[in-house]
Amino acid sequence: MKKFLLVSILALGLGTVAMGAGGSNQQMVDSMLTATAVGDTVGAGVPMEVRVNIVPKGPELVIVDENNNIYDTMVFDHGTKLAGTLNRSVVERTAILKRTDNHPFSADGAGAVGTKKYTGKFELVSNGNYNSATNILTLDKLSAVGDTASTKMTMDTELNFIKHEREIKATDNQMRTLVQSVIPAGTKAEPGMYIGTNTFKASLKVKSL
Image 1 (cartoon, one colour):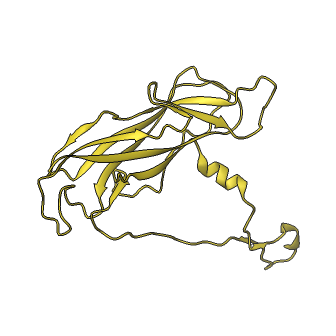
Image 2: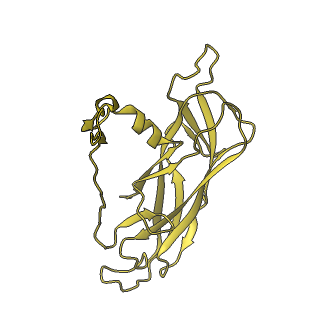
Image 3: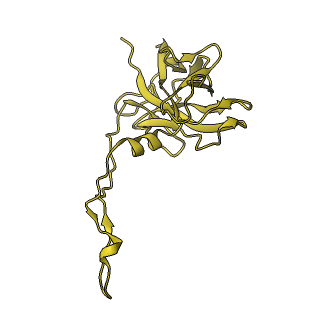
């Protein structure tokens, strides 16, 4: 049975949507009008936390960036642009498939290198919004800003990465590609937030033992 590491891929400013979607968690909010005398103090506070998730080292596969950070979500944020005809916009991410213990793919649990060879590839799941023949990921308009009867409700971005199957030697300990999200020059854009989601996948197939 094949096992794939699935990494969700979001295009365009998911953080912005999350920020606007939820309510405020402010715990203390004072009115400036209450500061009427010398020494009066007013302010606001919000809960804060710092997080880090540590996973064990082993033969498990993960997709990491160029700084060895494991992707929770691969985000391509093209920022905020003016409506109309857009200039070409490119956002890049590095994707590296590896074992969490950094040993070669063929190694046993103790790290001893084996003889097993593989073929490997990266791909996007075809879930109705991605055309693998043209590399086009379709973004959907989420907000109603500027909507008219003729509003275009989608926008296209090219997702470029190394898609062809490649040889993986027994001593190889990683497989990598650069992933680009490209909004082509001349794209017509109307006001609103456009987001496209998919799953970026890396897989290894045993070629010889």
